[in-house]
Length: 120
Image (cartoon, rainbow, N blue to C red; front, side, top):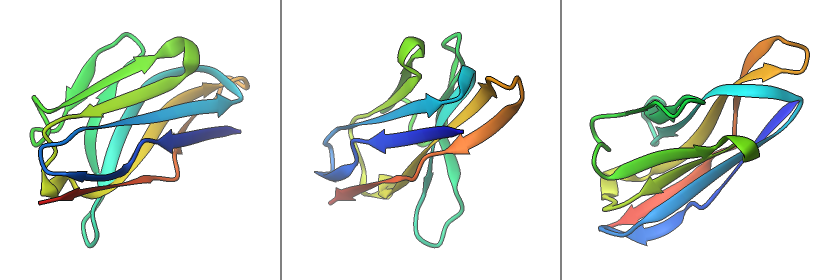
């Protein structure tokens, strides 16, 4: 029905930057909320940031002032600009979308994840 494809992960030194992208495609009427989550080995998945279609954003305390979430509604794409990266930001990052489908039902969808590794 809906596919979320992430890109932009990789290996970076502490203090560096990365930009993640997530493009949604498929049977989409509209997307309300889009967000980024992360999961490190042995830990539960946690919210990093999310943003509504109107542009309201929310951040985890650990990334405030360093990460910026944005979206292009016309492209059904959400971005995560990550600056001043720290080793503790190392995780698999997952995109999530709250989608109103062409069938007028709603559902949550996840991307496949992209690895972000920050070396000290």
